[in-house]
Image (cartoon, rainbow, N blue to C red):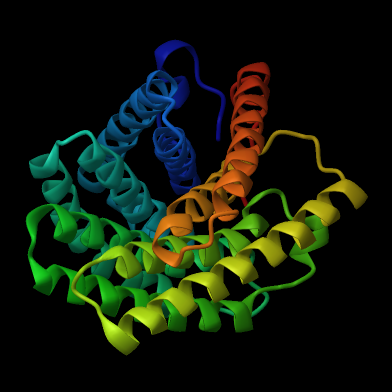
Length: 315
């Protein structure tokens, strides 16, 4: 980003800035799940304000700078628009704002194919962690669809959520093939999405497992999928954390918000999966991981404030 004075400091933000909304949103979800409502609402307010800022910037770019819009819409980071909208919608649903959540679901559904098509056309091997956003956006859509289905009692939405979950799994496998594993040791932050994407898969599976639509073998299969994807997400968490300790990368980068989101998502997945799967120890584990995610959010925010405009980088 170029240095700009005064109130235009936030103008022209790159698509990767959407991860900041995702991070604040999932922290809010996690805090709600452990009953910290005041802190949860504060995080939600941050997420909502950031979403509005980025949505305005998105619209201005769409109608005022088509060249830049087209070039950025083809990058995986553009899919943070879908994921951020879905995470915000899921949290607002928990507040009882079901109509708003449904409206955000419609918006996310409209954005998903428009952005996904361009991203898939430009996929390549040796990709950074942002490549996994094809999975994250799809699974976040699945989570919101499952939440709205539970609120409204519309079984067809639960089936749609299941379809998005299955598609997200396939997209994860495809992204994994293209991922440059050297990013684990040298990535600037978005490499954490490799594990965070599986945590979103687990969260989606947990919501589906909790749905009364499924019974018998289908419920058993979804419970198994929840536990397997969550176990893989936790394995990624351990690998990525070890790599950060061995190869510290303390300098602020806008992609660090893509580190905070997976940390928070892994915590939320553990908290959400404990009940539907009957694995009680996932809840205390989720609480520990949530405080780690909150600390990472605060540190990243402090680093952002301490960084002069134009000091953040995006690849």
